[in-house]
Length: 548
Image 1 (spheres, one colour):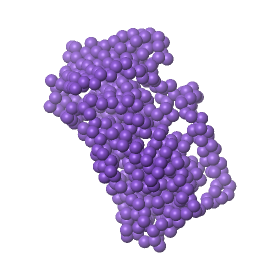
Image 2 (tube, rainbow, N blue to C red; image 1 turned 60 degrees about the vertical axis):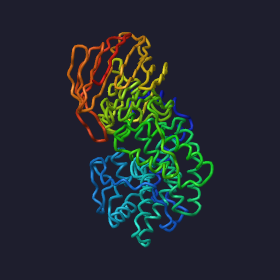
Image 3 (tube, rainbow, N blue to C red; image 1 turned 180 degrees about the horizontal axis):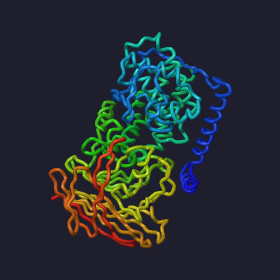
């Protein structure tokens, strides 16, 4: 950590419960102590799990067919031992290293290749080496990996028990290790993955440890459902893509959790999450790119909702005009058109990892095609990380090109904004929303950004107002789909998008700048961004977008 991050870090920890901070400190101390002890006395820390595998025929499988994935962000892995489990293209503490050890890519292998990779991993990737917790033995990667192993072992009927003994022992040992290292210091989607792995393990193994895995999973599940699934159903991290991943994990948990308090809470949460999944799905079937996420990083909502219905749930019906109050999302749907305004918080209070500084941002889909697009994410580690989270990357307003929140590191945030909703008026053919945020109130003159969005069919009128401030430069931005072409006029512009012409009329000065869109991890598409210069705070300006 650099010295300049100390202030933001102190402001960030004010949002984190003391118990979580204590858990993080304990885990960090244990990790380093374990490395030292393993080096001094190899094998001392390793204790076999008190669990034995049930017959594979009794093992459950995921309620959804596996999604085949034989590459990690563009890198293929040859399933021929010895495998390089620490390649140069996947440095420690990167998404590439995590995905390598999650083993999603094993699903596309033949039985022989699958077994060869597992035996190689068991023999050559022990715990407690330097930095073990940021790679192979990262609790999140481990949770995904053991779920892949258990699901694949149950599906591959041709496997013989006589070659599985070291693999089954490793599975049990990994689950026992996970039970002692749950990510309660982090929570969120990570802890959900942990709980799914433990509950699955309890169904595949028997013995004292296996019983404890199930009890531990149910105990935490009850607490986490209350924390992570608010009344409106959108997962607390406020990323539609991650919402779908958590929704899938909870669907996988459903047949594993016995009747009782935990199952009742899970069924109630799934009903709310199904609605939020439908709400945050664009007409093209992909998730809205609010916060971190990509168009294909999660299973499509359609498949998840089909699975939910097959489990006895009802397919949700989202009204033409609707809101997710806790998440602060407001939407109008008309056929394959969709307008969404994000007037919610950055992310979960104690977990800002996947939040973007996008308060009061606007998204518009026309005839099923994304027209005003969210920035998306190219990578989690690298030069583009800060850019994708920045306010200037989103369809909202900046002051002096600064961010609405104090973002630092790759997943952290110090100071955040508070949103005030002044008016929400649903109409048959749209809505009017007025909201403001204080993300810039720390600047001279305590400026506040107030935005009114009026949607009426295929006409969107936006008024941006900066109340207070001391001459900060105000700019509103609109990121366009790569297929949009722009012709600037004296009082705005004409935007051509497939068969549509969209008029932009504004009281602000307009310019077009080159930009990029990141619809998926590792995918970059050149496009353009409109910048509307509102002047110096305090100030105001309006713009209208209307399809001809």
